[in-house]
Image (spheres, rainbow, N blue to C red):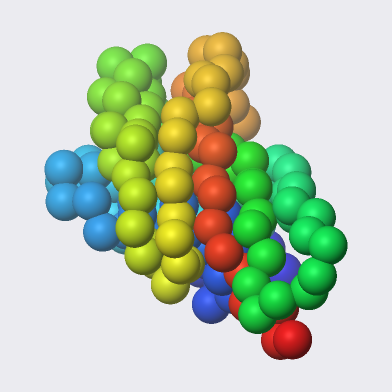
Length: 144
């Protein structure tokens, strides 16, 4: 499914999506409906954010319990109409997620750390793009 809002499953991308959708300084520049999971359409109003999972690692435990500790690497790509807009938005994306802990976005015992920022790249249709990565650690329900 493309161009869909971030789903209701609890994973790192969902947690980061919730953080971004609740961060008022960011929402002053980016419409809440322009924060997406999956992919961005070619006619998405800009600036827009794309939240994607890069990798998922579950910690192995000797005995299965009610939860398992997960570590997701999540990338948030900013697509903007200008380099100045891209830089302003990517800074707010980093501020929104950096060094957060607690029960966040439906996730339990969440810890969010910055995990690197990608290069400035040319986006489709003469747009500007850059990605900010996060390391999102949380407890997932196992159903055990």
